[in-house]
Structures are given as C-alpha cells and as structure tokens.
Amino acid sequence: MSTIIDVQNIQKTFGRVDALKEATFGVEKGETFGLLGPSGAGKTTLIQLLTNQLKPTAGKIEIWGQSIKELNKKSFRQSFGVLSDNSGLYTRLSVYDNLKLFCDLYGIPHKRIHEVLEIVQLGKEKNKIASKLSRGMKQRVLLARTILHKPTLLFLDEPTSALDPVNTSHVHEGLKELTKQGTTIFLTTHDMSEAETMCDRVAFLHEGSIQLLDTPMNLKHQFTNRSVSLTCTDGRVITHEYYEN
Picture 1 (cartoon, rainbow, N blue to C red):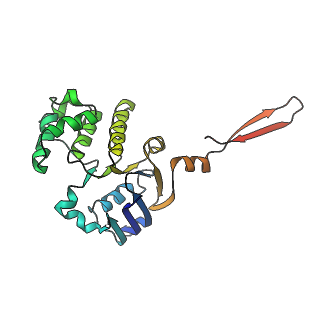
Picture 2 (cartoon, one colour):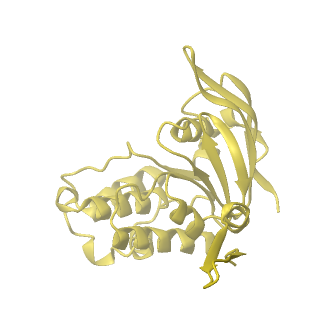
Picture 3 (cartoon, rainbow, N blue to C red):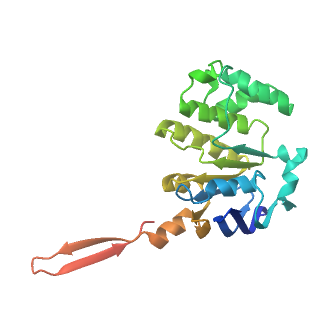
C-alpha cells in the first residue's frame, strides 16, 4: 500500500494554547482512517491543517507525496473532497439544483447527480427544497455534494454528528460504497462505535497529542478485559477472565 497522507511532528499553537503537539501518523491508500477524541481534543484543528485551511506552527504534512501547499492548485482540488460543519446548502434551492450548481462549477455532467443521490439514498428526494429537509437529510445532501467530482481522498469532520441512527446508517452505507471504489477516507468522530464500524485504523487524540493508533479490534483486545465471578457455597470466589473476539 502507498501512503496518501504523511504527517510528521505537526504542531499548532494559538497564542499560548497548544492545540496540537507533535502529531505523527500516516494514512494508506484505500483505507478509512479515523481520528477519535472528545470535543476540544484538536480533531477539527488537525483536519483544517490537512486541508490547508490552517498553517502549522511546526512540522510537515504531505499529501500524495507533495507539500500541503500544493492542494491550492486546481489539479489537486479536484482530487479531494471536504465535509465540515460549515458546509452549507442553498436553502431556497431544491436538492437537485444545489447539486446542479456544483456540477456546473466543476464541469461535471448532470447525470452524476442521480448517481450520488443513489449512493446516499436520496434519489426520491431530489425535488425537495433544502430548507424543508431534516438535518439528517441535509447532511446526506452535503455528502452527495462532496463526492460529486469523484474525489480519491475525502476529509470528513464528524459526518454523522447529532444524526439519528437511521440517517447515520445511510451515511455509513454511502461511505462504504465509496471505499469499495478505492476512495481513501479520513474522518473525525467522537463515537467509538462509529470508528469500530467504519475505520480500518483509529488514532486517539487527547489534549493535542495522539495517544494510541491501531485497528479497532486490536485496541479492543488491548483494553477490554471482562470477567465472570462465581461465589461458591463454601465461600470461595472463582473468577474467569475473557476477551472479546
């Protein structure tokens, strides 16, 4: 596998506050890489650095073997997509017209709209006005817009935050379909169950530092220790420890 994202000793300081402290990791081609951590851990700051919205205080970031500065070039912009909490829709336009506008900006055939709406399971909602959509449906439209140009790399900042289980499932299915097509996904989340469901590897970010990085299963085996205790009639206590497979 080839490394798509290479982060070396990245630091980001705001005034006297260290938002990130020497974070180092890599993301391989075709994998879904999760960044897990509580609010304020530095997840959004890191994804803004990876997408060149912020400049690092120190350290190095390379995407596709190129400096992060190269992302400003048109050829690179068309290779990645970003979904963040400030990715708004035009509320007076229909779902279809929202996507059509971005098709025209990217020079994409309008037939692509039907393809992405099927991926996020909104094909029947294309004529609905955006302001009339539920929050979960809006999030799925935003995901559809993010993948219109068939990016090979996706940055998703808490894509299912505050969504109900049904809409979360729709988003997950759409993302899994993309990974089958070879898309590399970097997502932030504060939900361990989402990381376990979606990610090939997970990094735990706490107070600006990466504390752990491994597959979800290995991390579960490392920290999940369950036991069953039996109290016998003679007062003896027998404890059996086991690990989930």
